[in-house]
Image (cartoon, rainbow, N blue to C red; front, side):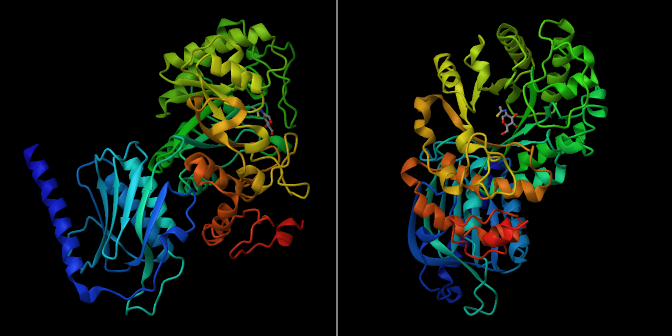
Amino acid sequence: MFKSMMTRTLSVLSVCALIVACQKEEKSRINFPPTDLAKENFIPKPLKVIPTNQAFGLDRFTAIYTTPNVEGFSEVGQFLSDKIKAQLDLDVLVNSDSDEPVERIIYINQSDSLELDSPEGYQLYITQDSVILNSNTAEGAFRGIQTLRQAIPEESNDTLAEQRIWPIPTGKIIDNPNFGFRGSMLDVARHFFSVEDVKKYIDLLSYYKINVLHLHLSDDQGWRIEIKSWPKLTEIGGSTEVGGEAGGFYTQEDYKEIVAYAAKHYMTIIPEIDMPGHTNAASVSYPFLNGNGKTPKLYEGTRVGFSTFDTRKDTVYAFIDDVIREISAITPGPYFHIGGDESHVTKKKDFNYFVEKVEKIVQKHGKRMIGWDEIATANIDSTSISQYWSSGDNAQKAVKKGMQVILSPAKKTYLDMQYDSLSKHGLHWAAYIPVDSAYVWTPEEYEGIPMENILGVEAPLWSETISNIDELEYLAFPRVIGYSELSWSTKENRDWESFKVRLANQAPYLDRMDVKYYASPLIDWKKSRYTYEEINKD
Ligand code: TNX
């Protein structure tokens, strides 16, 4: 114990010595042109940005150090180093004791400072000689390095010294999220998306500090996760998708890979098995589940609301217990989503009875239940969570029960809504959602739901009209970037005119990541491979 404290103190001291040494080494100072940290295109906008108008030169004499012996910190340092390498082809060593000359350091520091009053809060102090990132937790450090990544210029300045230098503006950033839950949902049931596709979506979301990915794993058109005790769910139920293509599913190993990848990005995966409606694929696989008296067939259309489980059969609940048990065992996050939407052929009292029974099963397996807003009609616990998508009445019912609400109003947050009548993909039953309309609303004051009942904001991407990653990106980007700011930044810090400019400047990053975003004509894109006309020609 004493020894480890000593090592820690010593290494903090040696890092301090290094900073002082760097500061003394006047000759390594480079004459940067003045900068303005407040003009960086950060999304989401940090709580406070105080510029000091000089520059930290990121170059091959820069090294990363992290607080030793605190879980996760060196991995966050390595993550930053890997991203710098991928972007700039620059090697920045992490916690290295090599003799390579180091002139400037990035220090990722665990700090118990009371000012950092949330696990995701962080402070960045950028001076000419060092970048110090303070946070209580590795999660906060991870959010902080996304901000730092956004301050690294796309182009190096090659006129300042012999080596290539990427100047980062100096100053101080104090940041903390407005909502702890900032999510997106991906429907892998209507069309299946591969593990690689999901990982790319995670990469992009986490750059904008989104920390929840909800996977809609079952619907009428497909069952997408292996359940070892009920193998036909994927053998039969996973074999098709909308339009009649081959479908697909995640083995439990695939799912674990997604969960682990998300965890590395400090992102929680929420699995959803949609019940008692939206269950045609399950009932085709095991017909005893069916409650509407019809012999089901595989379904490749896009209608909703025609299927239901039999809510009065014990064997149905034994089946659900197995499904929730197997998925919960490989899901480290605290939530299990039971769907519950559009059960149009389930009688009201059967629906409520069903939700109440399934809530107990979810709790038995150690998870907190989430359901679409309809679940609030049942007699459920205040610990369960209602996801508002269409009914203000249901939201009020949830609030009366003391439940938390996730805000996903279809007419504001549905990523599958078309931008306008020219959009190549998407639906418009709830609204057309252009990029400004997606951003300009106030979750904190939505439909009179008290702030203390709002868990956060989630933008669902339903996949009836999209079948590959390019189409996914067309609908999600750039709107999901706006939802990241709506859920991270405070109301006072959000402003369409400012957001619009910062969004325009995301083009180089999105291009570098090969994101086929929709180049909305509302945005004066900084540089884009896709013009509005090109994207809209078919
Ligand atoms: C409604 S939103 C649905 C989904 C569809 C979506 C299409 C909700 C809980 N149910 O089944 O995919 O509309 O926009």
